Amino acid sequence: MALKDLSAFTPQEYKTFLDSFDTVLTDCDGVLWMGNDIISTAPDVMNRFKSMGKKVFYVTNNSTKTRDEFVQKCKALGFNSTKEEIVSTAHLTANYLKSQNFNKKVYIVGSSGIAKELDNVGIKNFGVGPDPMTTNMTKLVTEVKLEPDVGAVVVGFDEHFSLPKMLKAATYLEQKGSLFIATNTDERFPTDTHIMPGTGSFVAAIRTCAERDPVIMGKPEAYIREYLIKEHKIDPSRTLMIGDRCNTDILLGTRCGFQTLLVLTGVTKLEEAKKWKESKDKDLNDLVPDYFTEKIGDLLPHM
Image (cartoon, rainbow, N blue to C red):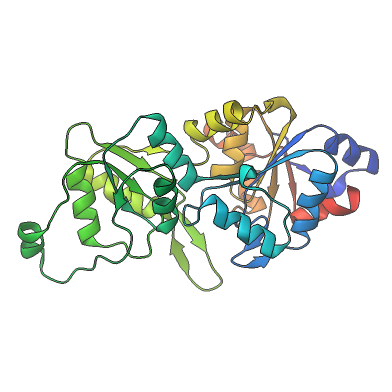
């Protein structure tokens, strides 16, 4: 709960900081890029970490792309990434279901990234794309067609979210033994002029309707913590988590025992972190990063 300003560090303090970790985990949206625009000199920083011999992982709650698609985006923006360095919630979902020896169909409230990752492990799925409300509620309830042998509902970001999708998801979740999986619960995404609902908004609607809690794949929940530490053999005491959102990125780091660095180019504002530091509520204290800096590019001159 230190909340130290890296810009105030002496050269020796900066060197000590950079020498204190061997593994770097970084969020993507709001840290490395916004949409298709890089933030500052983010590619140079991440590539320099690798040339320094540090292990690098791109850890994102974004479920709209496969790992291969994230690699393509990284390369287009100048990041020297590999598929093994991408930790995304669409892939985690497929990995989780495969580990459960799942052999039924998955109903997806989400996008093609989830469907493609499920296809990659041989799990049947459906639901991606528009499913608009074309009738009234009475007819929808009586005429809706449900698929047989559906054993799981996965909810991610869905630009086609609709009442028919919510009805189908909740109905499938009524079936005994069905699995309810959420890629993440990020509430929203700020834009220059509007607030865009995040995956958490869709999850909350289906959770309320189904009267069930999902297993959550993404930051800061248990599955991704176990995956990072066990699958990639990460030493928490020698790991740095970089993020722009304290209730996902920084909280993941706190729960895992990582060092944490907040960049101020995304969701969380410095004033919020300062308020949480002064709070007597431990849950709010856990949102406070060890360090903060204006943007990830601030690290480059010291590397």
